[in-house]
Length: 163
Image (cartoon, rainbow, N blue to C red; front, side, top):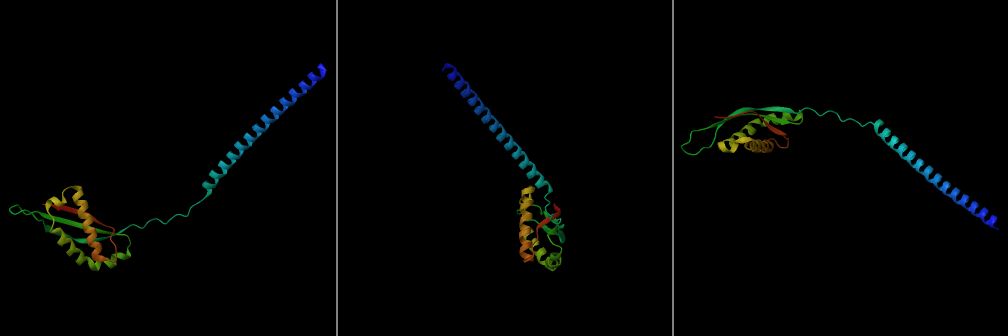
């Protein structure tokens, strides 16, 4: 009997060892397959993005410009101060070439609006970059009201001089 028990315990130990070995083998194979699948998926995802070609947008058209006649106005000053003058050369930036011909007939109106506004300025109104930025924004607003329904992108200063 003792031999039978030893034989059964030896068979049980071998069976337990073989079950543990099979379990380790199954886990190792499953891990290997998972790593292989992840690598293949990563490869195909990157490969797919590299070959995919996007339709390219046409290059943007350069803006068009319209010259506004030079303006020279006197600035508002306190009584007794010497008179200061503002000389401005302005260009209107327009997105499309076809709008240029629609805006040109309105240039006398634009000039009038600009001069009316500029004559109300004080020298302190245009000091520094913040003053010039406000001036540019005001002029853009006024030109867009004069040429509506056309649209001007920006008012650009070619020259601005206070003397």
